[in-house]
Image (cartoon, rainbow, N blue to C red):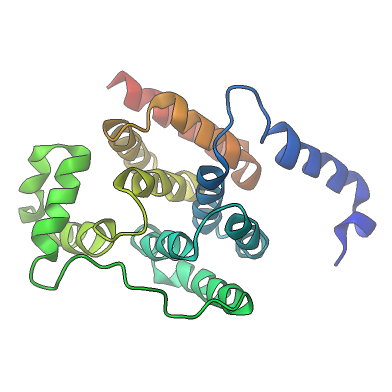
Length: 228
């Protein structure tokens, strides 16, 4: 459907806001790769599958590599669950194949089944502090968080640790209802150099995709993390 024919007034205002005003807002701009990464993660978080299919080609054209795009999708499973991520993985595979990109992409894993817990806990500690080295002992879900979420995904190459924390922030902000975790990950971002001003830029650039309520909640979480 051509929305420029069926909804011309809406498209005029939406395009101006999302693709001009927001992108070029003074003091809120991000480099193109970071902006596209944040939008992809945000669309996963808010379940914007149709918009994701439009955004992924733009992201690839804008410098996001196929490996980076796949890593954003893979890591989303820890924060959204496979039930919500599977359609995005299917869509990405179709788009990549359509561009003549051979799948599977080169492997990015750095852990084994034997050391994923140890390395996952180390990644947690790097982000949140040394107290996380022992946090996995506080029950099986905490152990899964260390070996699966961090050991299986955060330790992969393809994205830096700071980039991984940024996209996690986007998943959480976009899905809503995760404000305690969003505040914690805002603080984790800051620990890795993604400071308050940077996170506010991320929220600004993603606002057209998730709306004002979740964006304003994210700003509150950023500010609370900065105070801590």
